[in-house]
Image (cartoon, rainbow, N blue to C red; front, side, top):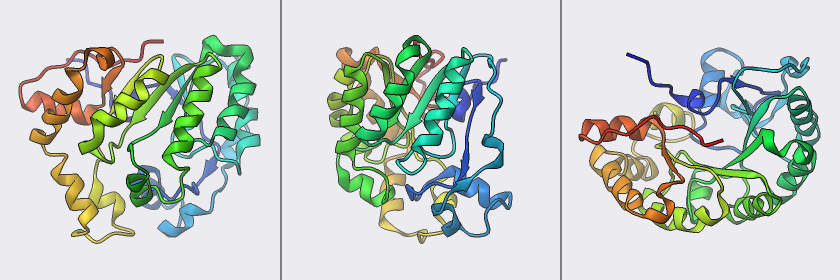
Amino acid sequence: MTKRKTGTREWSESSCNFQLGCENGCLYCYARQNALRYGKIKSAEEWATPHWDGKHRLKFKKCPGVVMFPTTRDITPRNLGEACRILEGLLDAGNRVLVVSKPTPETAKALCGIAAEWKEQVMFRFSIGSWSDHGRAQWEPNAPPISQRIEALRQTWMAGFRTSVSCEPLLEPWNATALVDNLYGLVTNTIWIGTMRHIRQRTAWCMKPDDPRILTLENWQTDEAIVGVYDSLACCSYVAKHLRWKHSYVEALARRGITLPAQEDNW
């Protein structure tokens, strides 16, 4: 039996990063947890002060499959210049690149300018996990507001690029239909839906186990609740072609007798 891909491997075969840490301050960040686990940072708070990773001085080469850039940090105004240099190098080497970010419009504009020569090799995937900025503020306190990310998505779509959205983690599952309804018109390719995995472990550095935010989201991530979200979205024929379900949803649906085909991007 072929093992189902999970995490970033659902989207790409290779990855590229260039700094350690991220100023977005997302409470659920898996990269922060891994950095603590492997001793790359001494405290969770240290993650919010990024510094350059020595491995980012790359000799760009053609990689098999899709390269996801970045996977464990974000592209922000602070590191935009270096990010543009790396994106240009990856594309010039002939790579297909999936650019994943929570961008401001200015960041998106700069990335589009760099990638303009290689449109057929690039897809932009912007992380938008809630429709209201209330959800963003609770879980992603220093990341750009939702309105800015949607404007960045609009600009990228208008510029003629492949566009996609990651709703993983889905921060407000109760608003999933409103979120997707307002995104699909700006998406040429896929909208990925997924849960916030390992909530308690990843937020232990800043939240108590009985925090209402944790309890509320856990209640919306039971198998029954996931089936409800799936049903509310999958029945919408006008968005169904865009929807893809991350491993967290696929597993929960399978336990309830709903078997999905392989979930892939449509480059």
